[in-house]
Image (cartoon, rainbow, N blue to C red; front, top):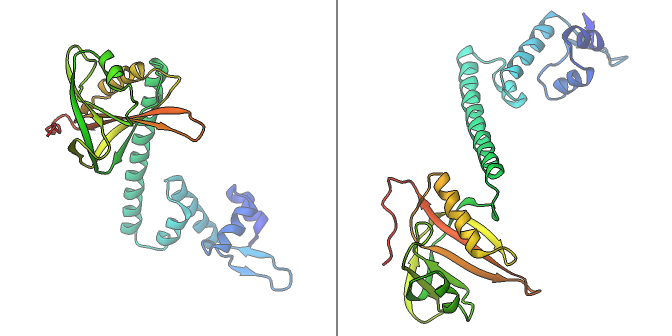
Length: 243
């Protein structure tokens, strides 16, 4: 029999780890001296400790090890399969984050787009046909809070736009959808931000699926910003069209 310090040295762990395993019921001593409180361990505990450490090296968390350490091998293998699948998902997610960071480093932008989902919206709008983006500034002289544009990239001719009119005008319903969103401070140019956003969508192979919504917001100090939302979908899904 070995005391806790001896087992710790033999197995290459700390006494604190062994006390924690005892506390959670994962590795209890073979005996505890009632007079001194010393923990005593034998070969069975050493073998169990090595099994715990082996399962930890294979990626299982302690709470899952506690569930399977005394279970049949088939249950252990199933837990390992689930752990491997979770690790692969995490690796894929981290790889995606790395790709986005590398893309931003390679092509600095005025915005930081992110993909999200939004609920349905019901608007009243006034439609207009725009021959050149400069005409938007004229139409928006009164600073409407909402502007919609039907564009699939940099405008190279006329395009359709709509201005939010509050409670008058034609009714337009935007369904719940996946969008790429970017917040554009007033100090940044909205035109440049729009170009950056379209370029970002193209690089990430995202298909524009409906009108881009530009929402003008202002805080209590009068500081303005624009929120851009571009609906996107898989390239094989038919795009949402204006009704």
